[in-house]
Structures are given as structure tokens and as C-alpha cells.
Amino acid sequence: MNKEWFFDNVKKLLSSMRKISAGTVLLIWALALIAGIFIYKLTGRNKPEKDVALTFATWWDDELEGETLSTLIAEYEAQNPGITIKLEKLNWDKIQELLEKKDSKDTNKNTQKINPPDIFSIDPYAIYELEKKALLAEMENDKDFTGNVVSIISFINPLYYNIDLLQNAGFDRPPKNQTEFLSYVQQLKETGVFGAGLALSDPRSVSQQLLSWIWAATGNFDPDSFSFTSKEAVDTLNFLNLLNQNLYANPFDLSKTELREAFGKGRIGMMIGSIADIKELKRTKINFSITTIPASVSYTKKPVFPLSVWYAGINSKSGYRKEAKDFILFLKKKSEKIAAAAYAVPGNGTLNRELSKEDPYYAKAFDMYEASEMVRELYRSPNISQLNGIITKEVKLMFQGSKTPQECAEAIQRSWENLEGTTPRVQ
Image (cartoon, one colour):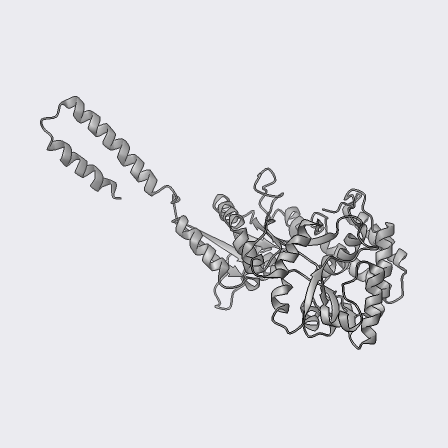
């Protein structure tokens, strides 16, 4: 509404009301002034003092069905006149480069300059490093943030198994403990297929592909007292060492995508994967299901799952922290829609009806989640990238026969303590 037009018309109205007393005229004028100010503020309440353009860098878009992020951005912009969000689809390495370079010359496929992002999705293993380098805006005292980040959605990592392959080997259910798992793998090998696979070509796969076995074996452990030299951890390393003799391919040459593809072609009987793998495996012809990761012995306590999380944060150099925070919290409010598009369980921690209504896989996954304990990545550990590399190196030496499981565990624990500078903690 044009305020000059409003007040001009009020003046005309008042000048025509000659017979009204001066006191009444003043009263009407005051009421009109108040109404005008209210209407003006109401129509401009969401508009910032100046137009704001935010850059949002993320790789999530490639893992979402449809145009989820673009649709949400359009919705947000409609609700917040004067604010625009530019979506940059970049992998984590490129995002990190933009954050660390003072004057980035990186360009996208259209040869346009990409500005350092105001908001960005974060590799969980990089959170501590970003904090040390002061690249992540400090939000520690903000109740909406976990530390300096916001978790948008999360995924459990279950054990996948091929129902038909297990039945051909004489099994009518998945294995319940590590001893049974080794027995299943050996029996599957005799039918002409590989029992299991591990994908360790990327050290960032350590949490899902290796540590998940240790979390499952440890059970309801105390984060303050966990050690790689515990009996459960050493026993699990021994289990993995025995499993290595019958694995599909060399695990250090195999990616998680290649592992999933081999499973989808019926070459592997069992694997650990993200719950998001369901959507890809449903497109194959195999008959599969999901279950908990086997512990050392059949579960007497709650099962334990590693939990992968999508985090978002704000660039410490952004000039629009308030607006960036508002957009991140908007994404958090839309987490159920994002979870459905990413095929994520537990997603936002509540039963996602869009996923589970007509799909037994996701309904089962959520039941498993509710009955289990969760372990997040070791993202609060300093130099987690180095630790992942150390775990990979030591396990490789163990698989090659250069170290025993006990020696492997001791080497990892020493390195962890050296990196932490104190007794480390699991988050």
C-alpha cells in the first residue's frame, strides 16, 4: 500500500467533514494515523531493510528425489520477500575449498564465479576441523543448534541380506551373532556366491563398514569408558579378520557404491549399508530384507546402530548470519519432507508416514530404530580424518597378517589417545 496515497485520501475525507467538531476531527485523525502505521508495518513485516542474497552449498540435492530443495527454497523466498537463496550443488571437497580460500577462483560448469557459501552442508568428520579454523559460525549457546551445527535428518545403517541366497544355503532367517554370520558366509561360499563384502576404499567408510560391528558387539556401552582394547572390540577385530578370508573382492579397493551394486546383482549375500540404499535395491530383481547388525552373541540388550547425520552450518564470514540461521531452521522444520525425499530413517526422529504408509521396508526400519540404541559418528574427536586413516591402515595390516587383532586394537587406541591428548570419548 502507498502510504502517501493513504494519507492524502484521509486528508480529503477530513476536509469534507466541516460540520464535525475539532475534537472529533483530531480523534479521527489520530485513529487514521495509527491504522496507517499498522497497515504499513503489516505489509512490510517480513521484508528486510535491504535485499539479501544467500548462497547455500550442498551435495544433498543429488541424493533427493525430485526438485525437493528447489521447491523448498521457492517456498521460503515466497514467505520472506527480499531474501533469495542461490543453490550451489557441490561435493564436500569443493565446499571446503570455498570456505578456506580468501578469494576463490573456482567456477561452476557455466564458468560463473561461485561465492563462498553462507549456509552449507557439512561432512560430519570435518566439524571439529572447521571449528578449529574458525570457519564455522559459533552458535554454541543457541538452543536451536547442537554445538555449532543443526542436524536436519539422519539415517541408520542396517544389515542387508538376500533372502533367496540365504534360503539356497539352508537358512530361513538372518544371522543373530558373529559366530552365525561366519557360518552363513562359509555356507554361502559353498553355493557359489560370496557371503559378505566390506567397502573400505574411502576412509570415511570406516564408521559404517568397520566401527558399526564394534558398536553392535559392545552393546549399551558407556561412552566415557569405551576403548578399542576392550574385549568386545578385540573379539570383533578377530571376527573381521576371519571374515576377510571370505570377502567379496579386496575391501580396500571397493567403494560403497560398488558394494551395493554387487549386492543388487546377487553376487553377495549380506552387507552393511545405509537405509537410503533401499530405494536403489528395490529397482533390482533381488529378494532382500534388512535386520540388526549381529553382536558377539545373540542380543540380550538393545541392538546398536551407527547413525549417519546430515548437518548444516553457517559460514563464520557470512554477513547475513541472522538470515542464514532463519533459513537453516526452516529446513529443520521441513525435515519430514526432506527425509521422505532422501528415503531416510529415522529421518527427523518421528515415523515418516510418506515413507512407511505403503512400504514395509521403511516401516520395519523405523521399528528397528525405536528398539535400538544409536551411535553417531566420532565427529567431536579432533583430527577424525587422521583417525579414520589410522584405523584403515591398522586393519589392512591385520588383514595382511602383519598384526594380530590385539596388536591392531592397541595401535588404534594409542593413536586415538595421542590425537585427542586425553582419554577419548564416543559421541
